[in-house]
Length: 172
Image (cartoon, rainbow, N blue to C red; front, side):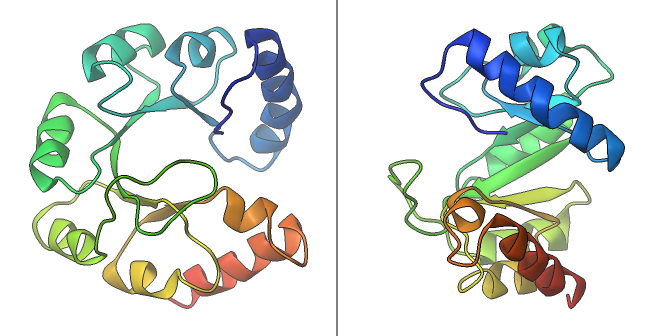
């Protein structure tokens, strides 16, 4: 769950709304950037990047049993380092322009193919992913897609977007 520029109280209230849905469907709720809140609300884990804090700090905050994912942008070397430290997954991207975050560097889907050819750790594709552009990322072997605007801004609504993404992933 990616929430920016909100008070802790608003983030906590959103988590309290979403977490029961995730729990009911046996899906982990991973909070972006906030291991402190992820731990206090008992989210499944946290996702951080190199500009947020160190992997070790996040792991200490959420505990050894929580999931910790790390954004590696386009660096397979950073991804390897993070998995050696214990990251549960690594994320590559941004692959496309995104309305939710200014994209400084775009990553080619080939990084996913290279990662999957040499590593067993799960990888997530992130950044500007929509139904119309996800095929190359899925074909490259991404284990998961992190999607925000591609769901919330889908012309037929978020539930339809989720169904479409599910179909594309299942066809993999």
